[in-house]
Image (cartoon, rainbow, N blue to C red; front, side):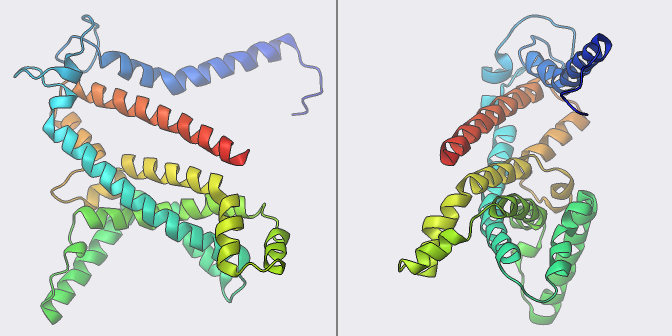
Amino acid sequence: MIRTLPTSRTYDFGFRLYICFYFVFLFAPLLVTCVLAFNDSLFPSLPWKGFTLDWFFSNHAERIGIFHDRINLDSIWVSARVAFFVTLLSVSVGTCAAFLFEQEDFPFKSLLYFLMLAPLVIPGVILGISILLVSNTLGTALEDSWRMDVGILRPGFWLVVLGQFSFITTLVTLVVSARLKKFDTTLEEAALNLGANRMQVIFHITLKFLRPAIIGAAAMAFLMSFENFNTTLFLVGSEATLPINLYLQVRDGSTPVINAVSFLLIAGTSLAAMAMLYMSGKSET
């Protein structure tokens, strides 16, 4: 569409109507969930029965708020720890991969780049099952042949980290690579001509230029890891992450504490996103 062309009133009305419906469809479920977190009802649904903060702070037998719900708090802590290690590994490896694919020429570069993108095409369910089967097979072989019990190969915390790391790294690589394509390599050449060594150039020029992309990629990696369900479902052990724990509660029937958890996550994610946008904009400036 050419924006300079004149438009009719019907088109303008339809365009505004589309925008309204789009954002209502996008945010109405989130708004309803947030409102129901304060509903004075034993069921996580309508009708509205009054305002209450019990689902956040109550510690009674009939109503246990999220801040006194040990199971949900433990699952939040597990998800946060998983997301921290996944973010650390993904940003480190993804940034190195971006340097490799954008600044180096080597045999089969296109093929390896295509294979790097494969985890984004493979469904998370298939990826989780594949990693589980490989880890179980390898663990059994090591135990039968060498009498070695490798805990990282059993379903549990570190296998979840490795499973999420396998595809989140690809996304980090793409984000950093997009920023790296805009980098002016003459800046590196000028620094080298002025006496800087290769490591000084990388840390003081290249990585400084990539800082907004790295910050954004880290935020994206943390959030994707925190809310991941498909892959985690097949790799989780006795320590359930928050999405797995919420799934089990919804399946078996639960109280509006689920809405309270959702409200806290929506509020926390929104604040984190705004903080990251501010920091990225400040770094860009």
